[in-house]
Length: 113
Length: 111
Image (cartoon, rainbow over all chains, first blue to last red; front, side):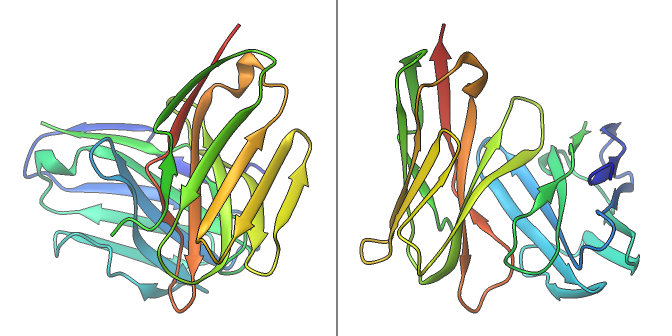
């Protein structure tokens, strides 16, 4: 298996633009997680899906952030409009079931100018 | 809110020495996990210890869990330069979803 796949690996955009991050979890994994990592705040859970259904989105910073999982093999995290403070590395992770070890993708480094 | 807090924040030792990192947390947990992150990379799972376990080994790694003190330690024996990385503890709390990560210990192994 190729592991968790994320795209793009790097994204540079201007304030106000829409940003879409993509994730393909490991086949057969039922849980998918989106995290954000910054120096100041560390690694934060944004949202968690189980069997394609959003279970906990309490970590989503504000309404500018939205996430979808239309099927078991694809998820998106969208920021609209983006702001400079959204600059961070965004990780997607998947696990077989909730509570199991999580497998992380390589991350998307987002820079909002 | 921060659940796991690693200690120390940074650790520098000589190759061949043992490295010990500690993690404290606040709420009741189902399990505690340790992850490694190399610079610019995603996190890699190292070991998972459940709340009813006290010690677990995996190769040169040894993890302990003390639920009465709400703390865990990660010991890396006979360290190697390739062990240089940031190490995070993450807890799965009862009644919560997902993992809550600490801010990590940055470990440097001097050759």
